[in-house]
Every structure is written in C-alpha cells, then in structure tokens.
Length: 288
Ligand SMILES: O=C(O)CCC(=O)C(=O)O
Ligand SMILES: [Fe+2]
Image 1 (cartoon, protein in one colour):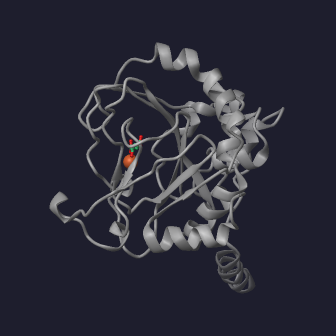
Image 2: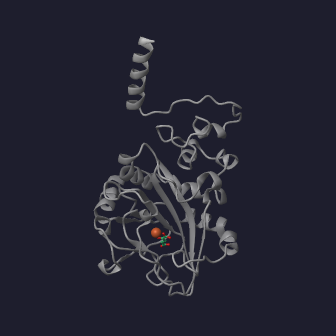
C-alpha cells in the first residue's frame, strides 16, 4: 500500500505528535544512500556526551556526501507535511538538519527530549520543527528504534515521571518516522549485536537559527550543484523581510556564474510591508 495523502498524515501528526508512514521511498534509495555513506560511517568517531551518546556516531552535511540525500530532503509527502505544520508561522521553511546516526551495540537509551528545546522562544503557540527519521537499518525494539511519547506535544513535561509508555517506531527502510519539535522522543537502547543506522532530516521555521549551519555545510561551490528549491531550503533564500540577506541581496546570487562586486541592496518585503512602506514613502515625497 502506498503512502496516504499528506493531509491525513499531517492530521495524525497534529493529533498524536508523530506518525510513521510506510513505503514512502523505495528501499533501494536508502540502500544507495547507505552505500555512499559507508566510508563516512567507518571513519567517523563515536560521539562524546550523554545526549549524543558515547556509543553513537553522527555526521551531517549529507547533501554533499551523497546525491541520494536530496531524495529524502525533497520527498514530496514529508515536505508537504512539514509545510502544512510550519507554514502558518513562517514565510518559508528551511532545512534544519541532515544527519546520519549510527547506534552501536551496548548504547543506552537516549534521554527523552523535545527537539524544539534548542530554541528558547515561547512555546505552545505554533510548532518550530518537524523531524523525519529515515531508517537505513530495520528498526526494532531491540536495536534502538526511536521511542516516541504520543500526546506529549500537548502537555508541559517537567519531569520524566510524567511520561507514559512510548510507541517504539519499529519499521523498515523506506518508512518515514515523523514527529513534531514539541513531541518527547529519544533513541532506544541498542541491545542487539548490530549497528542501528538512520538519517534524520529536519525542517524548521525559516526565521530560526538552524541546528546545522547550512552555509558551512554547503558553501556556494557545493550549493551551486543543487536545484533552486533545494538551495533555498539549505540557506540560499531570504526570509522576508530581508532576513538572511547577503549584501542586501538574496544569497542565491552567490550561486550564479557571476556575482556583482557591488550588489545593489534591494528590499525583500512581504506584500503588506511593501505596501505600507511604499505608501509612507509616497506621502513623504509628495511634501518634499
Ligand atoms: O536516533 C534516534 O532515534 C533519535 C535521535 C534524536 O532524537 C536526537 O538525536 O535528537
Ligand atoms: Fe531528538
């Protein structure tokens, strides 16, 4: 059975704080991505810290490590879901992270957390983030499948005692595990003899500081190879008004063949702002 329409998945995401969508991408895409990342998985050291985990490897910048990473970032069902959850609170969404995670045998359960706690703004009015975990290994309750606490996006969690039983997101490569930035979750303990590999692709409100610095992960020489929509998600777009500009221009000018030495600072306003500013300037010019 193919994936249902984005609208119904967004509804379950809003209702439960998560959804697991089967068969979003052919497993061959995930296998090809994993093959491209094989040497990176081997060479990357185990992490440092009780949150990242001492028996877990992580690396980012996936769009420059494999051409297949773009298939995940740009997957229309999840992109539709991220837009439907976030676009009420921003002009455009952005890529928050594209990271590989390899959990080794013996790793303990990760601290249950909300990913939106990375931003200190007020919570409860709107979502900040939609995260999508794409398993590369089959996720089981023994190898560290993500544990998600349904309904926790609706309540203020001040103690781990408040958490009920998690849903263990057991599923196969090709599935997309989606959850909100406000939903408590964490990787499970890996009690198996094999590594558990996954990709996390996150989308956040376009006016937030992204978790992964996209301009360092994907400098202009790299971002030039992206299509315009992907480049826009990865930092090469302004968020109106004028946020994220380069020399008063959309940073996407850096992806063109020739970049003016002295760019012309140019308004990038929302239509309502454009109109208000224009009216004001017109009235002032009239009396000048
Ligand atoms: O790997 C997982 O299953 C979840 C990881 C996670 O939630 C995180 O690192 O923020
Ligand atoms: Fe997380």
